Length: 351
Image (cartoon, rainbow, N blue to C red; front, top):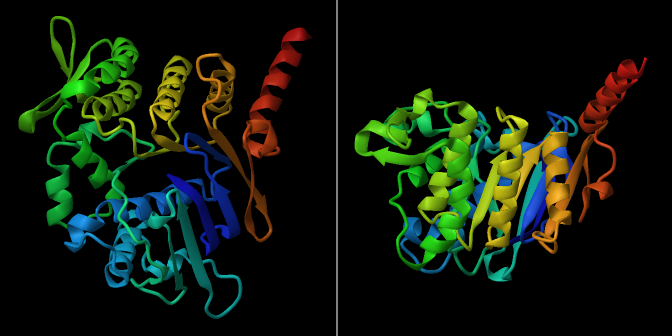
């Protein structure tokens, strides 16, 4: 698992050290404070390592390959004009950005840096001694099922503005369904999701995805977007990608979901944590955060490892608070606004 992510002069962060749990990790903050950047920094590093053995042709990491591959994936995931744009500028002249990823076990750990003038180069200051065996999954704020047919081919053969995370996730969505002893656990996770969607997600070769109902089927383009987001996670559970080990990074799971769907997504996420997936989500939804808090207090999910991270705006950028509960991360302005609106509404009702 990713144990710590330390960012120095990285985008909005003068300095921040995220100490993750092996289960649920929730990053909370207003827009523009770097929530998505944290997800992408972690994902880029884990993805590079998970593909290292195949891409390098070597069973052991080398500094030369890690440097080249890291730069490639950071550029493809963040899509900056140049890599140096990710380095925080504090004053005229050059500034250096440093990123450190500490894993358990430590053989996967690495540290790298680059400066504001870097175009597509990083310097690896600590090389891992082994490749990460588990493939990470990244869910952007929008669903990807409707663009799935032909998207990977388009991405690989043309210059596009799409982030690599979309391509990576589409490849995983097209993987074959799992077989064997994992099916019992997969079925337990899938049943409530499929019940909420009203059917099962199926892939029909080059045609794309359909929602299979009891007596018919529906093109996924015609399915409500909230159901399509649920269907994405259902597909990756069914293929076995999200089983027992690995990493899930999910940017705003609540986007385009009604409260009932948000409750189901929260429950599915905590179930995945219990099965051994390290899940990191970014959100500014008070409803989702409260739902996580409620679930973690129940007997069913009590003891699930969790960490909460609050990002706060200061003159010099974003500062971090963190703890094992949401009460430990301080006041988040966007959350306080939701609470204040509820108070105003209740006050008017009482007049």
